[in-house]
Length: 481
Image (cartoon, rainbow, N blue to C red; front, side, top):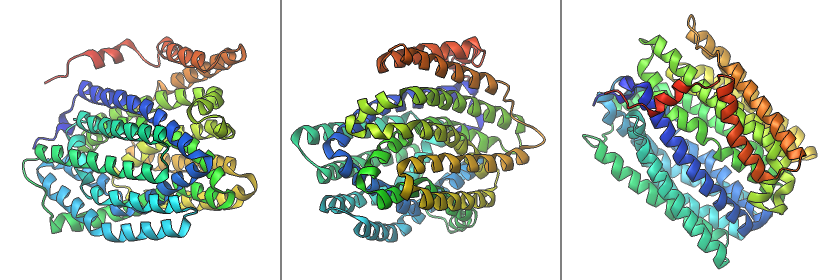
């Protein structure tokens, strides 16, 4: 199979990113409505328990893959003729780890549950874990820069889940009904994705002892790092749940869920660009630098604009989505918005560390982040509540960003990505925040703020030359053969 990532044009990459962002924005809009219905169905206390279930499954479920997809991505991008062996090794590893992961998940839910509904719902949701064993096949589309198929499947999952939640909400159902619906929805989408992915492959994936040994040897440091990253990203919610109770966990979980949903931005961009970087390194260094610069600019535009809006519109957004009961959580949204900016660049740095073969450095950085996050949360959350958890998240992401940037910057020497437009992007976002503040002070509501942001931010980006007309032409121009 020819490596599409190694020959993808800038136009093709731009279109692939655009397709993902548009699809994910549409799914995000539906997701906001669905999350609002779930929050209203359960209330703050039960929503805190519902959110905690996913924290538990996220922490434990990571061991089912150990984050080794990045290793498979890097290896197959360079030698696409071996993709079936790498996919087979990854699937074999996932299925081998599945039973102990399920057992550990059940034990954690039994230990931490605070209601019969939470216990039953958590046990039901573990039923979707066997379908994760074939999740590695999503890499088939990523390596071919054909991510429209995963976006269609994501939309299918969102629509099915949305319909189920609406039925449960208007029918007076509860947490157990939601768990059954989510388990069925995830299983359906996973099976569809597997069937379509297998049709893309010339041969069925087959386990290879050689690739499995390589996967374990190369991926183990990366996998341990991933476990630590998941831990410091999620442990604060468990500490809030244990130290401040289910209601506080529900408030924090609501706004943190908005942060989680916003991850579609770096995921969309790097799903397309990471295989291109992997296929170009180290022989095409200039192409790597150009691609990194493009990723950084796109991440800055999206995350800084979102931060500017979150600082001004946090309270009306939270009230609209979750209701007045969740309004006290609004103060944490701007802080988590600042963390989101750093998280976006953390995705980029993490992808680069994997491509550049610096897994051991990522492990050290993750250990430092976990130590800081855990110590600070244990010290500050009991007296100060979920706001302390939000600030600790920001501090942790800043530490990770600075440490990983230093390592990546040194490895890319002597060349450096051209980030000349970064300052203009920062200025555009800052001006946007100032204008939105003035609009709100003049009595503008949430609808006015949204319209103003959608109109002003692109105008500011073009006016300050953070974006240029040529960038639009790339999206509109036909991809080269």
